[in-house]
Structure formats: structure tokens, C-alpha cells
Image (cartoon, rainbow, N blue to C red):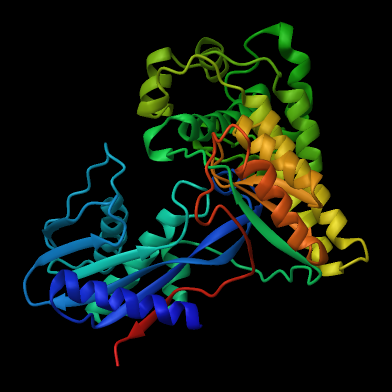
Length: 440
């Protein structure tokens, strides 16, 4: 890893210049790209991420005081210092150091620690920020690993699964194709906008309403829509103990019904109407008051939302979850037209994100079209959306011409409105996981 070695040497020099000492160890955590499976993880479904070569590096020196000093090689991110035993996270501001504090505090709370040692940390990263490549998650992961290393603690695999229940299955990706990341150069900060939170709430509401449509709690609130409830009523009849107020995720609805994702799409057609729901209709459905909806179900940043597109969000979630399973199956069976089939699923995913989940933007749609035009078998937005990156599957023999044509078509337009950025367009392959490097 010659490139990584050079970065570590440079980071060591910068650390010495900043703190007047040599770091004791370094921590690395990669970014990741979600190949397929967008906005369905918090609904209970599997996704297919891939660690990329771009990463976050942190040089660390434990100190004998309680002072925590954070610095960043990027001058856009100012220095920060605080007491390691008085970690306060300002949730109202998406400041870069808050992500480090979250990782540190998570380890502190997990082990029930009260006294933490101080440390000097210098952060470096080459993951494009606000691009959907999980730069913030990589920083949180790094901070947690930094804290564990300073404390001399280990987080075993069993503990990790218990702490955050995860199951991972290896998927062998096609050898005759590469994945290319293209940055739209449009940033969308999830922490500073409500788009993401509204979608989460719409999915949660979409999971609750069908239980009422089945007549299990308050019955149908309007005879004019009873025909929408018939299928759900039949499917839910044997689950009379179900309570809508306990259901939080769309996957729970499928699990309780015991039916396939394809069948859930049919159920969604009958149980939810395509027209947006307003708060009053949701209240009639759930048999609650507007005040109860606001205080008991809606989050603070969704309490003033006037329309909820439950049908569209549920359709995206169930269809996207099915595409993830189809993607995995194709990779396992490896048919001759494997790359074409995977590309078609990625194209379908983008259309669903654009039309059903409405998390795309004009620049992303344009970039996807350009990528497909110049040889990508499939292309889609990746990450939260509303900006950020696309991921494309490109036959390996077409990669050089693909990169040149996309760069010319999107990043070198005649109006000069989008100047090329470092790390805007690059091919990537599966990268390694988080690591700790000890100073010799």
C-alpha cells in the first residue's frame, strides 16, 4: 500500500508540526458506496454496500491530561478542544468534530467508563464530503477505534453484533466490470435539512396505517375506502393481537403477514392510496388527535409537514428490497449476461429513488443519463440523495473511454458552471476494513 504509506508519513510530519510530538498510532476507516439498496436499511431491509479505497486517517497521541485536542488537515475544518470527561455534543449544528465525539462517546457509554484520558488527534481524509460515500460514518468509526486503542480495550465480534445487531453475507461481484463513482458536486447535508427525516417518518406511518385498514383496532374510518382494506383485512385476520402503535418499520408488516416482497407490493396497492395523506386523514386512520400525532408519533422536525406520500414510499421500499435480493442472486448464479442484469436492477433502483422516493435532483439525473450514454450498463444515485454521487457498473474494457467521456460531458461543460473537483470521478474496487497502525 505505497499510497497509504506516503499519506501516513505526511500525516506524521503534519502532526509533529501541529503538536510538537510524534503520534503513537494511526487509525484508518474506509468510506463505502451503496451499490444497491437505498433508504431501506432503516425500514428493516438488507443493503449491498462496498468499502471503497478512499478513507479517513487519524494520527493519535495519548496525553496525561484530560484535554482532547482535535485538528484536521483540511483548513475548512477548524481545530476543537474540550475535556475528555465532559463531552458535550451540540445537536443543533452539524460540526465536523461532533462526529468524532459521537464515536468516542459511544465507546464510553458502551463500556460504562467515567474517566477518559486526553489525546491529540490529527484527522485526514480523502472521501468527498456530503457525497453519499459515508465520510461521516468513517470518522465515527475511526473515533471509536481510536478510543478503544487508547483505552487498551477490544470490541469482539460477538460484542459488536450484540451492540448493534448486524448480519453480513459476502457477495462476489462480477470480475468483468468495475464500479465507478461520479460526484454530482451538489452537496446535501442530512443534518441540516429535513428531507431525510420526512422520508423516515413517511415510512414509519406507512407501516402503521395498514393495520388500521385491516380493522384490528378502530376499523375502517370511511366506508368509501373499505375496498382498500379488504386484502389487508384478510391477510391480518389471524394476527388479531397486532398493535399498530408498536409497528415502526415496513419490514415488520411483511414479517407479521409472512408473505413475499412481491406480494407486499400488491398489498400496498390495495391498502394505501397514491394521493398524499394529510395529517387529518392520518389521525382519522389511527384514531388519534392532531396533538397526539404531533407529540407521540411525529419527530420535532416533521411536526409541520402537511402531506405524507405513504404509498410512494412503501412502493419504493418493498421494490428496492426485492432488487437487493435479486442482485445477490444474480451474483451467486453468475449468468453470462450478469453485468447487463445487474445494470438493469441499478437502473430500476434509480428510477424508484427518483420517482417514488423523490430523493434525486436534476444534477444526479443528468449524471446518470450521461453515464449510461457512455457505456455504463447501470447507473444510480447512491447515499441519501438530493445531491452527492452516482455509482455505475461499467464493463472493464470500456473504462478508459467511459471516464474520458463522462469527465468531458459533465465536468468540463462550456458554461463553466461545474469546475472539476479532486476525487470527482474515479473507478474503485472493494477496499479493506478499519485498521490500527502502530508507530514503530
